[in-house]
Length: 87
Image (cartoon, rainbow, N blue to C red; front, side, top):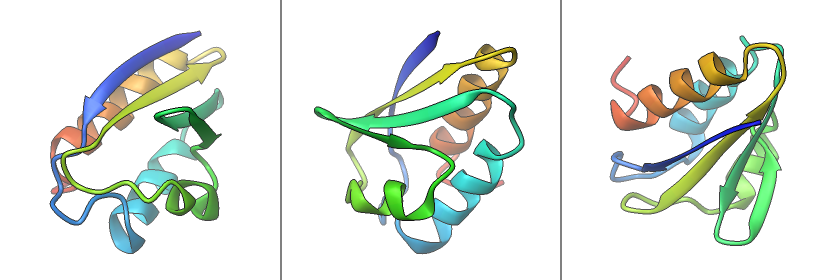
């Protein structure tokens, strides 16, 4: 299992379009991936799950992965969040 915290840079947070980019990126990996905000953990490959967290800009989240490409998955998703979804 690989875990990393990241500060959401995008002012709008993980809503609608940025969340869609996040889920698409998560689905590129084989590992099981979760997003955690405070005490709630959801499947990072689920749009409804990610949206249900209500992640706004300035929030710190954890990206957690478990599987054969867990490090690559977490680092890729953290980079996407840090970029403000400019990719």
